[in-house]
Length: 144
Image (cartoon, rainbow, N blue to C red; front, side, top):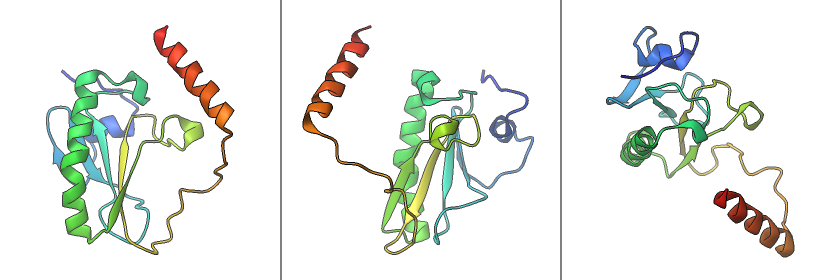
């Protein structure tokens, strides 16, 4: 049985207490259209687990698998319906990363050439030594 948080907007969608334009639903996930879509194409969709998890690292394996399968299934359908040439698949993890609703969700944003959406700003060139050191530090952390 799913566990909901009473004050969570997305949990209210899962319980059908609030209306949403649902594109897909099964026992573990719900996919609905974003009310503030990015870009010029229709079809910006959010996929959420039907159990409350605030960040991706908290999501139980079964729900994580269901989210991944929903992404795989929905991307080609949204591309066909919207006429998109590509798709951004984005998961903002934490408020500082742009997560506005503290319930895990994946954005599927249909894209077309020249749509004006920018997500490639503030990038930097990493030094090779930095890359190696950070990769090693991550490997060590995974052992703990």
